[in-house]
Amino acid sequence: MSDATAPTRPTRAQVAAAAGRTIPDIIAPGLRILFCGINPGLYSGATGRHFARPGNRFWPALHLGGLTDRELRPWEPDELLARGLGVTNLVARATARADELRPEELIAGAADLTAKADRYAPDWVAVVGVTAYRIGFRRRAAIIGAQPERIGPARLWVLPNPSGLNAHFPLGRLGEQFAALRRAAEQRTAEQRAAEQPAAECD
Image (cartoon, rainbow, N blue to C red):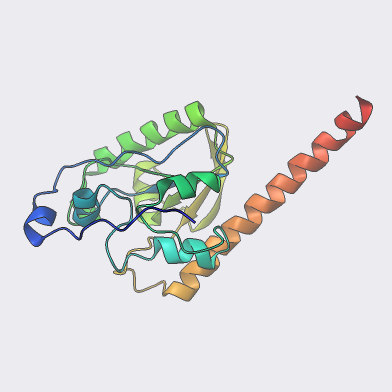
């Protein structure tokens, strides 16, 4: 278990002052899944941690979906990377609400995400927020789940927004969506291993 301790909660003034701040990606080459949020909220901007606001359900859904063996915390990036998972954002700047973002920012963010996928080559990229995905990638009819196209070398998946404001997806249902991604990733890994087996036997 990580020995990281919880950071001090920011004050209201610190949260309000976080508009426009950015958060470093949690990323490394060859991840199992690179999750891509829409953009940091002000609370996350104030703390410097992804999905940090109390009430955001990303970390519980990650665990409920079987992608982590315990519920990780926003201040445990090394623990996330150790499990082959990472986090980035479509748009880097923090805002109070995602609907403050301009369409052109999301479109530019999609291009940046493609460049990251090319550079770091994760097995999967999972965009967390279907509306932002539709705008950024110009896929107006996209639905939650696996997408037919790839992003760089990575397979592409869209998840619901885990914000507590997303009433369409209570935590249990959100966990089911993360579990569907986990099963697809596990199946893909099994297929890759099976494809490599004959070549290994010939050595």
